[in-house]
Image 1: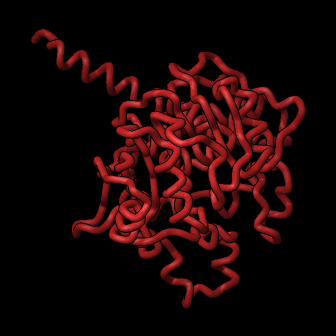
Image 2: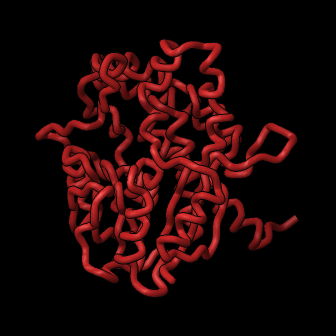
Length: 323
């Protein structure tokens, strides 16, 4: 039987998807639960036409957006090669990624298919990392709890996946509406408070504060604006943002897997992998990525849920436009 054009395109699309999954796993390999979540975010974002000028609010080190834009890193690069304060993770909830070396130089095989005009973040070290990607035209230190340092109607597309971290979220959303052009596009990827029911957080009374502290390391406390769907939508309306569309990013099954993953032992894994000879690290990483590419494949689907009854997503993508 001859192969049809549709079958050929389907196979090509699947191959492209698998390659993209692998690129995310390669970059986040020692936290594979983050790798598939980032991939799911990218797949949702791929449904939205992106037009410049573009603002990437809360861009961090820029690795996610670089991968989303089809940039390809060399196999030896990952986000764990330039970290610090590993010994302070358990005691001070240290952000090990808030560090950049003078010689930080991500190996790039091919650049992204588009550039981003502006990236913002609160942490200058993360912006320093993003700058080395050569992917952003401008990087601006920014506290999203105060007014954004941009003129009205500056951007055609505004993307943010950290709105639920912002304490003054109502003010932030109003600022997003202000800097987005009329008929422009705002893409917000937000967690819903239902995620607490899909994690060990709901069993805190049984497991105890010490156990929860070791597991979360202040993670939940940072999500100061997490709420339910109706509250998010009310916030959008108050900020002058109209919902154009929404898609689920992750289900409770994704949340259950992501909740723990390798999080508790990640600092020790990172320390060990960064201490061994680069050739041995590369060999272990290659086999590791091969394994997790297989293990995570069923979960690289935003609709994947092992439970029968319906439930709220753990994370949603909203596409909005200023009214």
